[in-house]
Image (cartoon, rainbow, N blue to C red):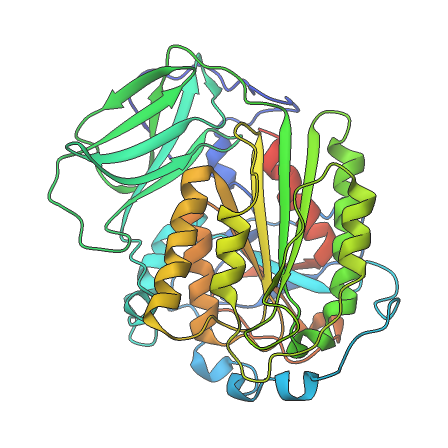
Length: 440
């Protein structure tokens, strides 16, 4: 990935937890590394099934696939989602231990921000052109930003896209100094010119007449300060009956992920975890939240106690879950990374206010520097896949999805993406989390 630089760039120097630095830190992608750059004719295909591994790194390079290179269509979806197993889920509580040992579920990852031409081309295809209007997201006018100070990436800087004095979108830089800004995300963008304002260490830098595009605008700042050495990690999990085929396995995998991340970063960062669960109106609970805690064993215990039940229809209380997750939890004011994994198999209710509330939560996540990482379980359809990918794009996150390779759970939707690498789920998630706290 090339950079649109506003000044000469010094050699890359990690501001935090330095473990090495490439010649172009953004060129490898924030989360995927080179793994999803494989392309050619096999879009949406799997290059290899990864064995269980402690490091979770199964990456390979190649050419960027085009949107016409065999990506899945609506005919590739799983069984009719309107008949998802919620009805069978009544009373289908999972007994503890059914998930067995970690390392059983398989998954893939695709970061549309790292495959921008593919994403834009996809949304121009007849099959998917209605998705922006369907969910009320428009990602066409993207402003990719990298903030640096003396050649080092600046993490957790506030960045705002402006049209005159009007703020259009705000975000915070990640550990790689990257932030994603958008004009016209939810409404028609005003006429330019546009400017970018970076605020860090009590000082502001303004760059005028910026141009949209995937090439990052590198903004140098004179003064920078490292953020607090904190990692906020949240899981928001659908626990309705339709999740019964995979919930016990997910509990084992996610518990392992949390424990492994604690071992990897616990000596360097304050590690805060929040686990949250949701169902739907009329169920035992709408949202069952747990606040951020540094007592990791307690968080794992809360995760393992949950069971799948309720639901009944297909849509669930996604809006309530996201609102609670983003607005009702004490996210760190300063942090190296804030991640929100959303594990689900069903969409929000298709009502205008519900969808507006979902969009508001996504925008609030971007403002707070919370990167959303959806994890698609069995039963997801194409509409929901695109909604989750909009979340990831808007917040600087990435899209993850379970695959059929494990043989566990119901049918998993083949995503409409380029070539991706199948990985063991827990290894994949540990890799994504590790990439969010280490600049290299």
